[in-house]
Amino acid sequence: MSDALNLLKTRRSVKPREMSGPAPTAAELDTLLTVASRVPDHGKLTPWRFIVFEGDARLRAGEKLAEIFRTIRPEATPDQIEFERQRLARAPLVVAVVSRAAPHVKIPEWEQVMSGGAAATSLVMAAHAMGYAASWLTEWYAYDRRALDALGLKPDERIVGFVHIGHGAPAGEDRPRPPLADIVTRYGA
Image (cartoon, rainbow, N blue to C red; front, side):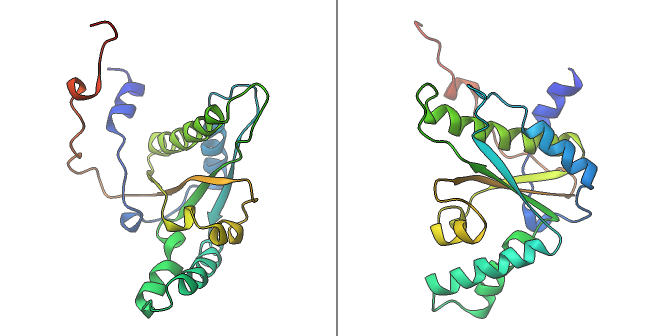
């Protein structure tokens, strides 16, 4: 089996709380984002962009999330608020993949959204290829307009996912994957 196929077959998510540093270097991050941007993009619209949360910026963003969480859940305990404050600091690096898909005369918006998903997938796979662990997550703040505004998204942008990147524990037992017989049909059969 080729190295590329083995890479694809061995990728698995690692929980951000199980990740450790160091984060990718600046040069490695440039490579990761370059790979993530080499995805199908009908019409060359670049209907996505990236927001990098690294170093102390992860904590500054977490402060904003904690404030918003406190307004949503006034009964939240100090531990719950602290958990929200640490949301983007659980991994050494977090990259938000942002969809900026919009109506277009020729390119369906759905294709643009899917291009953003392909960018997130390529980012996860590139991290795995470099020996990092990665996890693609969306949590409450990916869908809360106040949080999106606080994280720097424009009104017409949405989160594709937050890709957490770091070093993870050695791969354990893989989760069960669906049998092909359950997910594949053949047209006309």
